[in-house]
Length: 102
Image 1 (cartoon, helix red, strand yellow):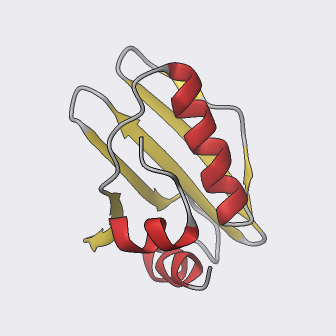
Image 2 (cartoon, rainbow, N blue to C red):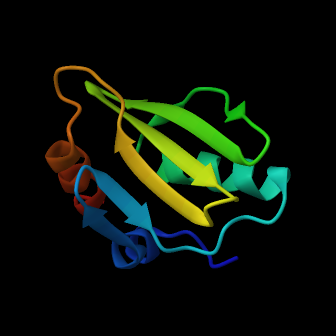
């Protein structure tokens, strides 16, 4: 898996409607998915909640001040994205600006 850095995140993130798609290869083990989620939180100065696991997905909710967002990794869809997770300051524009400020 590619090293997750702030620059790599900016290069691999793209907006699509109300989502921010992440074009990284999907982590191939639960441990690597957890490391990715933790590194993403560290890069974005966001506190992750424990991951929620399904048969083919992992989701993590993060808080960065008033901003709340969700990381979704779906192995069946072969996709990874971020989306706002509710709250006054949580919208796609704010999340996009937060990513690009790092």
